[in-house]
Amino acid sequence: MTPGFARFAVLWASLAAAPNVLAQGGERAPETAGAEDAAGAPKDAAADATTDAPAAPLVVADPGAEAPAPDPPPAGGKGQAGQELHDAHYRVKKETTVATVRHTRRTRVKPPDDLRTGFTLSGGSVATPGIDQGWYGRLEMSALAGKRNGLFGGTVGADAGFEYWSASGSAGGGIPMAVTFGALGPLSHFGLDLGFEFLIDDRDDDMGFGIYAPFARGKLGFDFGAVMILAESQIQYRWQWGAEDYTDYRLGVSIKLLGEPEPAPRETEDTRPSRPYY
Image 1: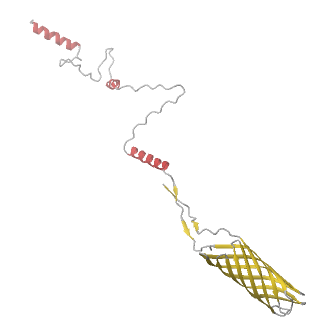
Image 2: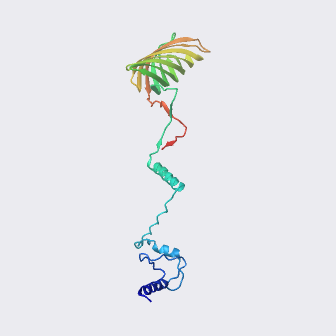
Image 3: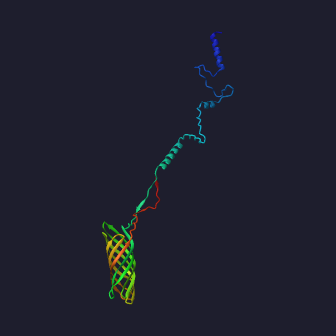
């Protein structure tokens, strides 16, 4: 046997004893599924694949601390797009200030610029034909509304109350009601009252009762807002049943004590529910 043949026989014997050694480049041949290990047990290719993956890091928590939550698996496709849309809506809703829009509308009826209510106390002299001169007194509830354009303006109002008059051997009283119209100036007021009266008179033991006895009254004086001081003059035809009709004349002073309430708002809130806008 020649030396070359002897070397080939030795190489062939080594390949037969260790088939996992390749002759090309000295690399190890890949193990096939079902190959046996040194103990004779078959090897699993999947088990070998898992042994090559890196191990997860070990997290050690402090005593008493909660274990960290595992990272959620990444979402993909429609699920991820829906989650991003939900997060964006929640972030906008949380960080955006909610503004409430109020709907207002204007009322057609505008309140007057000057609205006053209160009491009026009047008194003075009364002159009646056929009897001596006497005196009268009157207490009324008054309402006055007006509008100014600069220093000047106009008013309209109403008066209602009780009156009493007395003279030598005669007396009487009644319930006067009147509508008043006036003009306003710088600290001044001029008014005209038109009304009627339910009355009872006793003139020299001649008693009578009348309804709708008409009268007219003129007033001129100072207007200080809450207080008005006016001179007044009145003429009245006192017609009645049971006694003779007559005309009397009056001249006196009237003091009005009026309040100044706040005017009603020009705008009213709509009753419809408001909607928030984000």
